[in-house]
Image 1 (cartoon, rainbow, N blue to C red):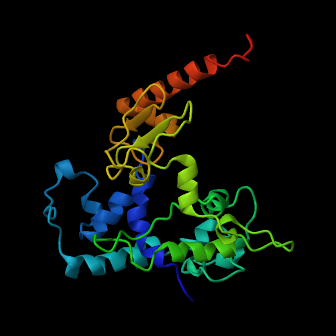
Image 2: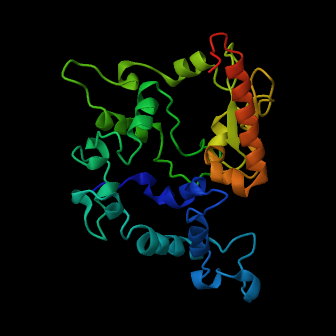
Image 3: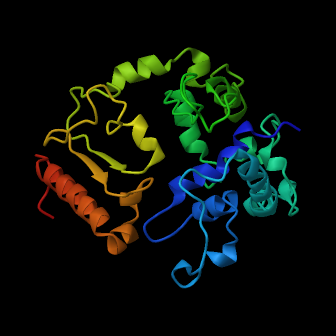
Length: 275
């Protein structure tokens, strides 16, 4: 058994699943790490609770709590929740195996597959890459150093095996991330027209886009030619869920701006009809 090295990141990764109208479970994960019993966090305004300081509780306490969250909260029923016969059983962990070529993880080619196969094709073929990896060696990282480009690229061959005629995906055929960035312009503005960027302020993927703090020159400024919107306090793809706009004014303002921009661009199309 060779479980995914990235399994230990599923707690932190749950952050991007938060929305203005719902919680992905990230805060429960954090409370468990800090040793806060869940029955004490339901109504903090009416209970006398001692919360950890901003400096945290230290590795000696946090690490066993992390293990407790994995073994008691995350793993039980996780694989079974995908509803594949191979992964039946509350304590089944077979879905975490990344070397099994017969795993539904790789063999479910249906349109409704549960592993974002269509998106994975883009990362392996274009190739976007866009892998969630550890930070550069000179920076602290909560992602294990073993979770690197090679870790994800190895899986591309299992997702998309070579066809009988020899056709294969982009990376295996020699395409590179550098060529993709050169084609799109990467963080730079190219001669693209009517290209709109939207990010959530606290989306972990924001740093890979034009609103990244690491972009040379800082986050890209919004212009009429290339509008750039950031959802205040937003998470991942917050503007796509219209309910977020109902419960959060900042998100609603961004949604309205996006719709207004698209309406303006469609109105500029010379071939549009009157119906």
